[in-house]
Image (spheres, rainbow, N blue to C red):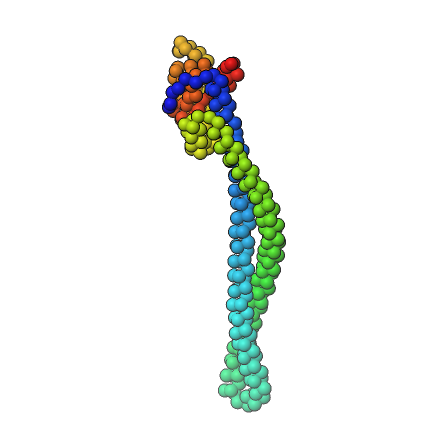
Length: 262
């Protein structure tokens, strides 16, 4: 840390400027977070639309497969019914031959069982097609509704984001203007700290009182809770240097002492 005696007036000016800059940075940070949250909501809606679109495609594909299967099963059913009709037309002719009657009965029974089984399969396929249709329509309505909502939200977000981005740029310009009014080495150090410390680069010190086991009054950095060295506290108290916590390197000050300085 750089040590240089400065006037109390300059000390107050620098501390007040750092506090102002930190507030400006925090405001800009909050606005940027809001922009990210808005974008995140849009991204979530976009992923939901993609998921619904994928479901619609799967339903369409499944319906095609079922319709193809239905066509084959219907053809098998028609062939079985045709064969049964042909046999029934020959029933009187076959009845004259005992052996033919036995074979006839077996084939007729087998065909009727096959027709019943194929018919059941066909009904099952039709039920699946109806179910797919219902799901498709339900998903389509959800997709269309969400799509309208997404487009409206996207328009709002675009308009708001433009305004918010402009506000962030204004705040950043104001921050740079404020920093240009204090010593360059402090401005640069503080600007870096704002990024590293998540916008908390200057903090007040906390009065720990006079614990019984200590003879002196102690103060701690409210940023990292370390007890500050005597010399650091003295510089803050008398306003002869802008100092940083030796542990977390945040700039430190005492609000009431600051007010008492001339």
